Length: 121
Image 1 (cartoon, rainbow, N blue to C red):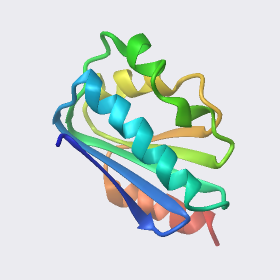
Image 2 (image 1 turned 30 degrees about the vertical axis):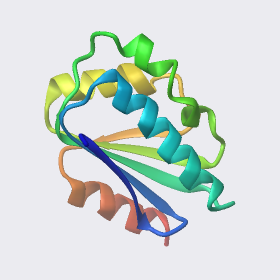
Image 3 (image 1 turned 60 degrees about the vertical axis):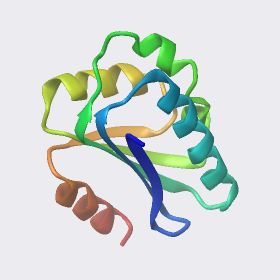
């Protein structure tokens, strides 16, 4: 599987880790997995999208965007994208540009986690 959805901090921080080529069908599954996790808690949370090892082209993003229903959830307060690859960042920006959560980009996972640490104090 080219992705993994896990709780980084149960009920508070959800982690979507993608690696390699991520086909359209995987995005449909990602949406399902994230929605299941959202149903497990009533808390507002952060979603970290680790795309640092993924190959996500910005082509076809509109088709993918239509499948990502979790992006309209008011439960997700912050969306943190981790990738130092500019093409991945562009794809993630196109995918997440009109979503409810605040969108932020980081080069490394440590930076994103440090930001969350400081913002939750």
